[in-house]
Image 1 (tube, rainbow, N blue to C red):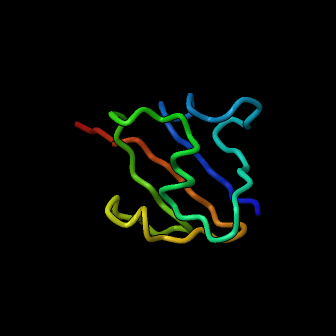
Image 2: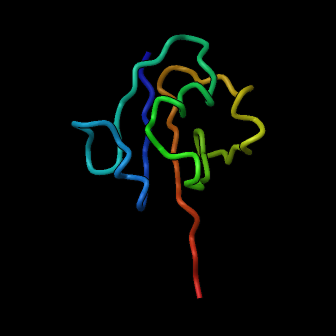
Image 3: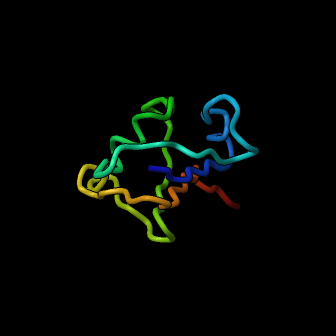
Length: 83
């Protein structure tokens, strides 16, 4: 089943080959958990990012319990620094 994954900022470099500017479609199995979907992306473990699923921020402790559904949108944002 398809889900959309959008990566912003420096995280865009970890999109699969053939992706658009900042997004890709992943085909996942029904019932797959957010943590399993995120593990399909080659983002190094030391890279921090914020995860939003369908406009809702998800805490990292919940990655293993959030079930992803068909046509969900997963957005990954790097930390934002300001001055």
